[in-house]
Length: 152
Image (cartoon, rainbow, N blue to C red; front, side, top):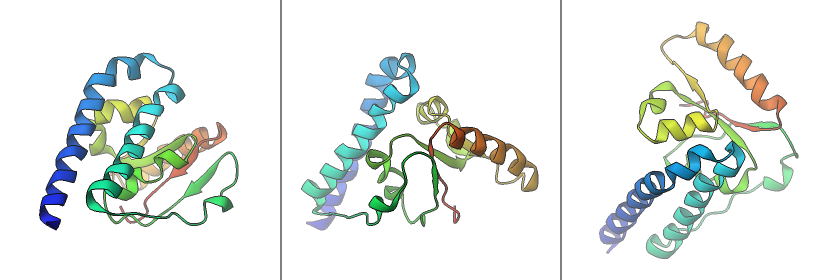
């Protein structure tokens, strides 16, 4: 039964992702960036609901009351794909530092570019840090919340 629920969840999860990205892309790319952010935010909410209904998984994020208004940096432990979207509904305007290769994924990369995510070429080592620090300062100065997964 667990395997069937897992297959059902994964099927709906990826269908939900692909359909939303394709169907809502025209709106996403013409809407202002913050307005367009509602699409991935609602997608994440729908996945939380699917997890609860299909798989029976619930979660609790502790400490959100300690986050300040405006800019801050979050550096959570990266354990699965889930933790990359778990925070989306709870953050006002997040910006992720992510590996550059993710920007090459059709639709996903376009969405990430629209949200001004910060790509990192992990092979460039020190050279890339200057650009990452510059972009980080720019995004934090606008009140965004920076998410970085130090472990990858």
